[in-house]
Image 1 (tube, rainbow, N blue to C red):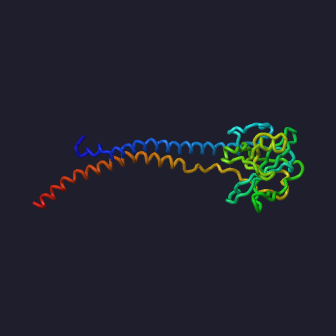
Image 2 (image 1 turned 180 degrees about the vertical axis):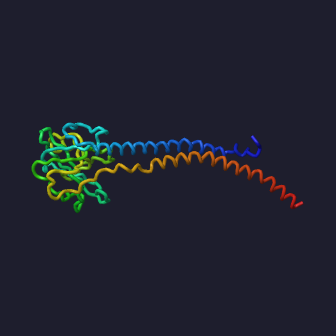
Image 3 (image 1 turned 180 degrees about the horizontal axis):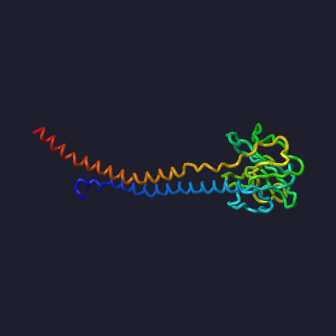
Length: 267
């Protein structure tokens, strides 16, 4: 090794090189993490677009009590016929207003199916909060009589997936998650797995909660850009180490020349 680069054997440079060796694989992994998030976002968008664009199917041809909605069926457009069971209607607290930031409630009303196979939970939409957290919000009544609903199929929510805790002590008819098994236990009735996010109802009825909009499926997010940034940062690390080393070598070379000039000036 040329003598001018002997500083690379110092403890300081050992730390610099070690740090670079740690950062390079770390940044590569971070890039792939963002890339996989990009792939997941694209796959999700494709699934949403495909399922929303598919012809509606009857809910009872898919679901049954205890059924878990497969990932490929989420957002599928389905129809169901029956009568709303207002006596077992509940609200789900801590939900955001569609397109806004206000916190309120989702209104979940069981629809007792006409074929007698049980009921399905229908998310009829969002309502604003009451005056205090212990009071039920004002909820427009569901339509009377036989209705045909069209909605988007959703999987049951769980406390673990939402990061919520089931500590109990909630006011009657108030819950934190939309879960068919929990509602079957609450109502003592047969409830099909999953739930519907209401899109339309015939007949439409009068006043109703604010419907939830279709999920967006065109925005792919910034994850690919972030992945490329991490990989670019990775390539800059060895370049930066080389630049620093050459700069220090240049400084080391300049010191003897400066010393000689100083000696010559004082002679």
